[in-house]
Every structure is written in C-alpha cells, then in structure tokens.
Image (cartoon, rainbow, N blue to C red):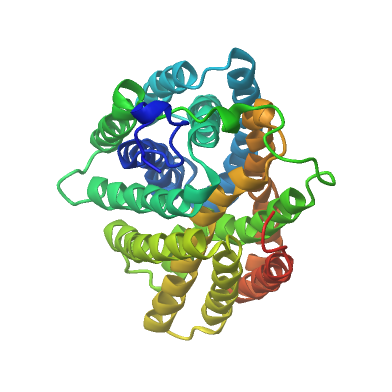
Length: 399
C-alpha cells in the first residue's frame, strides 16, 4: 500500500511521516531541556547558596511541593487540551510562561521566593508537557509506537547535554546559565509547533477505535510498573548531586553532568533498537521488562559500590536502563489508553507516576539516608524495580 494518502483515493497512510516524528521528538526534548539541568543542577546549586547546610532538607520540601504543582498541571492542561480539541496553542502558551519564570529564578533572594517561582514554573512546564504528550497519541499509530518511544530517548539525553553545556567553566553566572537553557528550549519546541504537519489518522481520534475490554487492565499494569521505576528514577534525579558528592567530594558540577549525559546518550541507540524490535515482532512489552531487570541490577550495584569507579559504572547501568524504559513506556502507554477523546486527561493520570514519586522520595530519603546511608535506599528501590519486572513479564502479548 502506498504511503501517499491522495494516490488512487487510498485511505489515510498507515504510518506517520518520519519528518513529523523527528520534529515531535525534538519538541519533547525541549521539555527535557527545560527541566533536566534546572532540577538536577541549577536548582540544587541555587538552594545551596540560599539555604547553606540545610540544603538537602529544603530541596526535599521544594521537590514535594513542586510535584504537587506538576501533578495538578498535567491533569488540568491535558484535560483542557481535550476539551478544546487543540494541543499546539497550549504548548505555545506554556513555552512562553516557562521561559519567563525560568529567567526569574536567579533573582530569587530567599527560599520562599524560590519556592513560589518553582510552583508557577511547574504549572507552566506541564502546560507544555501534557498537551504535547497527547499530541503523539493523536498522530502516531500503534505500528510506530516502539519507534516513537525510541526517539523519545533523545529527550533526556538532550536535557543532560544541555546541563553539561551550561555548566562549562566559561558560563559562570546563574543568569547566563538560565538564559542559555531558555534559548535551547525555544529552539527545540518551536519547529514542531510551526512546521509540524502530521498526517491525519481518523481512527486514532475515533471514540471507540477498538473493541471494548475489561476496564483497561493493561493500562493499570503499565501505570503501576512505571510508578515503581519512577520512584527509583526520582530518587536519583533529585539526589544524584548529593550522592556523587558523598562518593567523591572533589567531583565538580561539570563532571556530574558529564556522567549523567553519558548514561542518557548510550540509552538513545539502545531504546531505538529495542523500539524497532518491538514494532517488528509485535512484542511491545518485552523490552520494558528487560529494561526493568537492568534497572534492578544497576541499583544493587550502586548499593554495593565501594569506590567512585564502581559507583559510576553501576550508575551507568541504572541510567541507561531507566532512560530506555521510560522512553519506550511513554510510546507504548498510548497503545493502552481506552478513550482517545480523554487522551490528555488520561495521560495526566499517567503523569502522576512522574510526580507521585517526588512526593514519596523526600520522606524516604530523609528517613533512610541520614541513619543508614544511600545503600539502604538503593536496595529498597531495587526491590521495587523487581516488582515492576513481574508486572510487565506477565502482560498479554497484545493489549
């Protein structure tokens, strides 16, 4: 069958254009560029300046309340984009607000002001991320969801590369760093908004595109599995800065960003190959289970690491596996959502797997790390990753 929808009166194409997939992946990466360097490097550094020795505790509070704002924003703006049946205007408005708030962060002179800016920034960021995620469900058929997930692995990688870029020694001030991030975010997202013209797939927008099934049991399994992996990922995302500092006090910000970037960079070809394999073999959930196994192994290695070299190696396994898992999961989640007319709202519910861990992890970390160290935390997270393996390994071949 030809891919040209106009040829011989053919039905709409069975595959989305590679051009749109690439522009969409770049826009998704823009969201990661907005939050990865900010939440992993710039926010902890600014918090250290403002809070001093109390920085870990205050970072936990900011993470907690920021996660509440992100949860509310994902649900609200996903739902609004469903109601308006339009995704791009919400993304554009969110982009403008996100950049404005990001540029205001260096001017915060106390922890309370930093908290207020963070809450507003989380709402604005999810005005981008919620509708943008739903846009993929509107435009990418099931046969390409593995490829979509593989391409989404570029998002955290580009986010990490941007972190490495803005922490180069030449960019010394906070103002210069956030300005560079703002420009990178705009450059990544705007091309999809202005030039992304996806082929239409009416079947993806039909209210009942597939036979009814028991209330989305695959969706529940996928939600739980992602939640378990995200709890582990959230711990390292928020506290990687402090864990590496405990392993090697001499390690600078640029080296932390470089290790983080390396894991995410290696994950890109891994996720692409796994996603294409899943599409070709019709086994969408096998790569997810395999990635969860490696996540568990990486966490055990981190708990047992006795020196900086072994700690970095174990983190690389963990970082590659979790990045591949989360990217592929984002693509395959679109396969199991039951109602296309509620896609934005349902993805907001799935987004809770990104934010709920941030509500849990500060308290777990505060409870475990001071008395037992990071080792106990990593072993607990490994047990959660093992539970995710069981959920995914028993998924039906098709859902």
